[in-house]
Structures are given as C-alpha cells and as structure tokens.
Length: 165
Image (cartoon, rainbow, N blue to C red; front, side, top):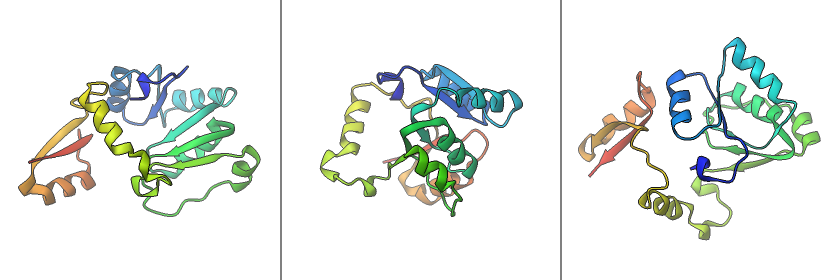
C-alpha cells in the first residue's frame, strides 16, 4: 500500500533476500540486505538524510534502535511489529530528536471511529493492494490450530497465512 502513497522514497531493509525481492515487486525504491556489511554501510549512509517516517516491522531490538537513528528530528516511528519482550531504548536520543511513536495495533487507535480495518478492506476490494504473493499458506477453518502453530513457527518460505471458510 505504501508504494501507492506520495512518498519520495520507499526503502525496505530485511535480512531475508526473498522478502527483499517481494518488496521490490511491491514498489520499494531501494532494498537493503540488513545484517550484511554492505547493508550496514548503506544504513550508515542514510543517517545523513533521515526519514520523516520509519516503519518498524521486525519486532527486533536492533530494528527499533536503527529506526530511532534513521528517523529525522520530529519524525515518527510507526510500530507495526509486536515486540514480545522488553526492549532497551536510548531515551536521550528519543528525547533530543522528539521522536513520535505511532502504535498500529487496532485496539490502540485513539479514535476507533476512523475504522482503519474497513478502509483496508475497501482498498483490497478495489485491487489497490493485491496480497496473493504474500499468502504462502492457507488452512481451512477446521485447522485453525495448525494455522496458528504454523504462523508462530514461521517455517522456511512462510510469509503470511490465511484461514478459509
């Protein structure tokens, strides 16, 4: 969906080359292989021109720390990932950069009348975003437990799962 937004750059960082290729297919203007010397060097270069918005979707402490470095003063970090454990942050950096944090969990939206979920469904129905390439596993409703276990295990090749009715 971001590729359809008025962005100057859509830079995607991931440690998985398959995910980077998907990002390219979905409209990323630059992909960076994180965790590699070249990827680390490129991220350090990008610190000179920080971003207005950084979306953290890895759920990893390193990604959250990098997000704080890569967002501009007064910029926003969008917390898309669920961090399953406590994290340590450089509160001095967050304070001096006046970083804003936006939590994307639907239950945390301050104004639920905006109905983000329905707007997303509308975009899907209009074909603005086609997620077929992202759904790698499907399960009938009767196998919901298996679907959840597979999602948690994230076997090789798993991106997203869908439950069919």
